[in-house]
Every structure is written in C-alpha cells, then in structure tokens.
Amino acid sequence: MPRLDLTSDTVCPVARSMELVGDKWTILVLRELYMGATRFEELQIQTTATPQMLTSRLKALEANGLVERRPYSEKPLRYEYHLTDKGWDFYPVIYALRAWGEKWCKNPDEGLAVHFVHRACGHDVGVASVCPHCGDAVERKDLEALVSDRFIAERESRLEAFKRK
Image (cartoon, rainbow, N blue to C red; front, side, top):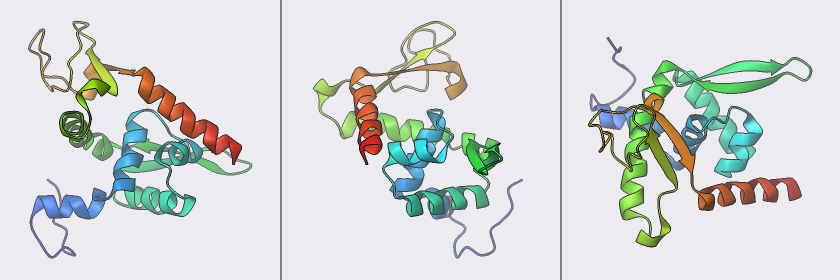
C-alpha cells in the first residue's frame, strides 16, 4: 500500500502527483527515458533543458523513486538513468498526453509523431489503449514504436545543433 505523504497539505492524488511530475521539463525527461535515452547528454539534447534544469529534474525523479542512477564509467564517474517500476507506472499518463496532444495540439495534416504497432497482431493502434484490430488492451511493453520521419528529423536537428555548440 502506498504510504501517505505527511508533508503534503492535501490528500488529493492529482495534486500530489503534480508535486512530483507537474512541469514541462520533468515530463520531457520522462518522455526521453521511455524512448530509450539513458545518458545525461542524450536527455539534455532532446529536452533542450539547461544542464542545471536537467540535473534538478533528474535528482527529483531519483529522490521520488521514479528513476535510478547506474554508473556506466568509472573514470570519469558517469551515470545512466533508468526508470524504476514506479517510473514505468507513470507511462499511461504520458501515453494519454500523447493521445490528447495528437488530437488537440496539432494540425490534422501533420500525422502521428509516433506510430505504435501492437506486437501480437501487427496492427497500428493509433492513439488507443485498446488495439482496434484484435481488441486487446495494450501497454507499452506490447507496442513497437515507429517514429515518424518528421519527428526523427526534428530529433536529429536538435542533435546537430548541440554538436555545433
């Protein structure tokens, strides 16, 4: 059973959740972790956060148990960041933000930024959490992500801009 946070001034779970993950930078860091980024530089490039901003968000995510650091280099000491079970449990929120954003924050001619294909049946699920072909409820582990050419180009552009600095 989750423990009650006695430092919070509310029992509202939405308010408490927002205390942990309620800003743009934290959400973008989580997006990148779900997309497979694990290293500080990767996270910084794709979120465009300043090093200080990214450091503070990663420390907060770690302190709140959504992320854990693992060393990948001894000299110099460097860490990778990995989602914990608690961090993975937040994924449906990101998936819902994606669905809402695809519907309400883009022009219809832009197409989906990421297509998710149901591994079990091979069909695109669109922005649904139930496969429209076979009717199975799907979770992230059930889906293959296919990033659109436009989103790939955007991500590569950020990487190139970072390299030019």
